[in-house]
Amino acid sequence: MANAQQQENMLLTEHFSWPPISLIDDIINTINEVLYRCTDTFATGISNAPPHLLGFADRYAAEGRTPGRDDDGLDVYPDAALEMEEGVLKLETLMENAVDKNFDKLEIWTLRNVLCLPRGDEELARWVRLGHYDGVEALPADATGSWTPEKLYALRRKLVETRKLHVALLAEKRRNEATLAQLRALLTPATELKRESASPAPAEQANRGAFAFLAHADGAKHLGLSLPQSQHGVSTTVSPTPLATHTSFTTSQLPSLRQLLANLQPHLASTALPTTSDADADKTGRERKVYLESQSKRILEKRGVDTREGVEGAVEGVRVRAEEVRALEGIVEALGRGRGAKTEGESEAMDTS
Image (cartoon, rainbow, N blue to C red):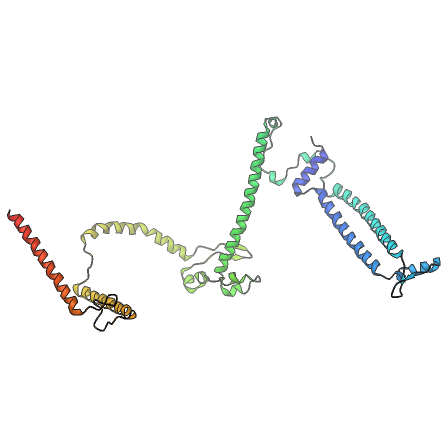
């Protein structure tokens, strides 16, 4: 069983969602990064400085040593680079020791006075209940023995799936908010779009305010149509509008309209529908014939067919005279009359027999 200090650490870790010691570690790591950047900058400045400005010329003079010279005639101090490197390392070690000493004190003081439970009661961690445990009943001590590894694994799987569902719902909420923002932009007038600080993408800007007339035109105001307005990112609802009254009234009249339709249906079978007169029918037929003839003439002329004597019989460039067409029509009519007379004679003979 965990001791009091371990229970306190677990409680604080669950409350903060991170271990308390990790905060101190992050602070110390940040200070060390700043320290190393300072020593790197210091080493770069020392290595670029002339050696005689750092006291090497006076040291060589005091020791009676003569510095060498390079190709440009400048003094060269062979041991200057080594001593500067050792000096930078010693400075870095000194600063590291100072940081470790002082921040170890900070770590101890913080863990004992800030990131901890009030002192005086070592068993306090057992009686603290976090906010996300509200409504959760603790199991009695004798019930813990009934938990099997299979039950614990099932509960762990449920917890994992619940967290996945929570993440999916949050993502769906963000997508819905983005969709609602785009739809509100379509209904926002151009005058209000100019006041917005954020500039949308060119593809979105082309469609912004395209449907603003649905809620801000004179006709929409006359009908009382008003949509939810967004103020500082929060959608505010509006009071009922006359459009809702019109809709409810129209809905209430539907039963009476159905009753009237049911009463009229028996009369529709016995009532003749209005028909067009013979004159109107002839006129419609003539108009249709003129239209068809004009279209046929236009198509045949495009194909190079001569249509000066009409379009009857002009098929695939072969010209048939109007007299021939009328003669063929007479023959077909005579054959039809003869067939009809023969059919009547046969029927009379059958009746006589």
